Image 1 (spheres, rainbow, N blue to C red):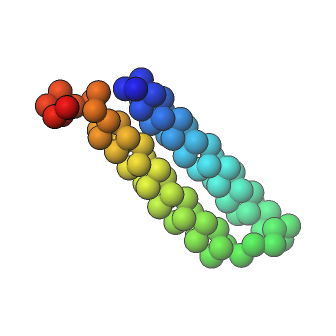
Image 2 (image 1 turned 45 degrees about the vertical axis):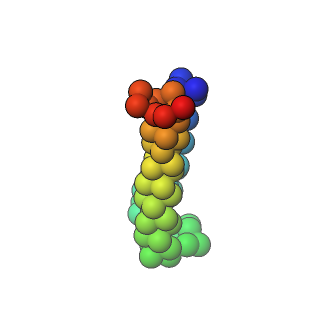
Length: 78
């Protein structure tokens, strides 16, 4: 199970990096071509804040899976 928790953390980090990559690609496209996009810049700001909050929550949950699993704690009472 410890291996599954590590894989979960790695997948979570890569998923967050993927989302940030898409976000920054869209943001740079918005800055370079402002007349072709429908969303105003403040919407990109809110999306960015949402992605940061999502990434933090996602990594916290993945770490809790890793730390709270019985196989990851030597002193866990059985």
